[in-house]
Image 1 (cartoon, rainbow, N blue to C red):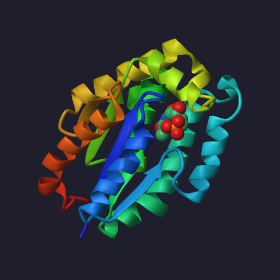
Image 2 (spheres, helix red, strand yellow; image 1 turned 30 degrees about the vertical axis):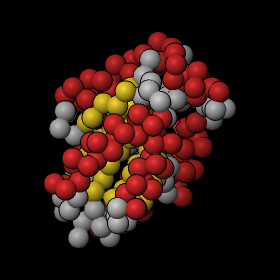
Image 3 (cartoon, rainbow, N blue to C red; image 1 turned 30 degrees about the horizontal axis):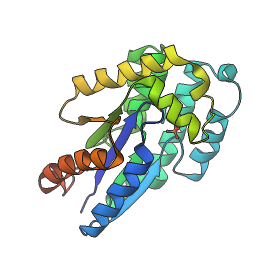
Image 4 (spheres, rainbow, N blue to C red; image 1 turned 135 degrees about the vertical axis):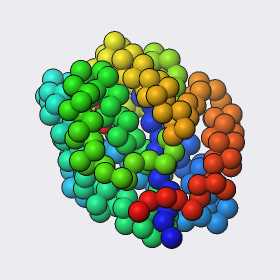
Length: 214
Ligand code: TMP
């Protein structure tokens, strides 16, 4: 039996992490085996790369350097954590994945999309997400939320204009791949956001719960 791969994407401070925990509990209650993970990170070497990426000055990496490090972390994460869990039949819930590279390093950072997609294909192969939630909210509100929860990482410091480009890029991805990507209005109460996610999951699981990874 093969599992399902669900990713959570979006701008800073959108409340993804909270909702992942709520969904994981709901799925476990419904009898599914669930694994929660995150990017960059999710495997020992990938977590080391995360430390390099989120600390230091905004200018300490070029956009291409970030893109390659994100993909280096991703390839370890896929090999050590995601593919084994899918093979074992789990539902994998991942906080950020390849769409973050498209939005941050591509849309906001300006990396050539053809090169970015080639790297993505080489790294991800056929282990792309089956379903992706894209959390959307105004950039100012998200950055404010991220700040109050104590966040101060390299990406949060990149400025408003950068994060506006990130937001637009995510919405563009959602428009291009509407079957896979579902936009979640994240500037609502936590309960309402949970309801929106569960409505999508309930409609999706009976059809795709068996997964379709080779
Ligand atoms: P987090 O704050 O959601 O834990 O993610 C850490 C930061 O890494 C966040 O600001 C987004 C950024 N990021 C990218 O720029 N590209 C990527 O591919 C991923 C996975 C994350």
